[in-house]
Image 1 (cartoon, rainbow, N blue to C red):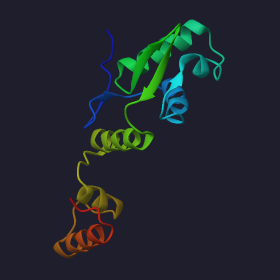
Image 2 (image 1 turned 135 degrees about the vertical axis):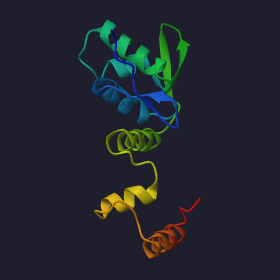
Image 3 (image 1 turned 60 degrees about the horizontal axis):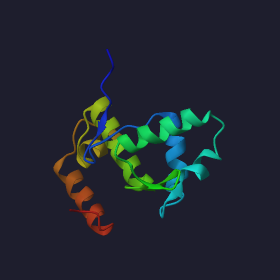
Image 4 (image 1 turned 60 degrees about the vertical axis):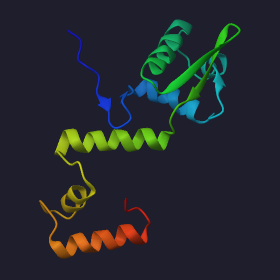
Length: 133
């Protein structure tokens, strides 16, 4: 039986394998889109293997694939930073049960939770960084 693929919240996309990540790195270098033949030229696998990898990436919701003659043009739907942020959030959630910045900060400081003054300091820092929601 096949293991279900991890879904990266909140993006609703499935996690990339190492090889898929290598292909996505090439696609991310071309936010305006890149032809499949140009992607193929950068990898040594058999053509069918490369085509399968691109098809899987497309099926995971990370790219749009538009047919152009004999090939496709792949355009990323999200940036690498957005993907990595979702990936690390999911890892923190799965591995450590951490779902908030407060929990992450407490864990980073070796604590199970922050005290009232530490919460205020964190809020001031976020405001200074213009990151508070």
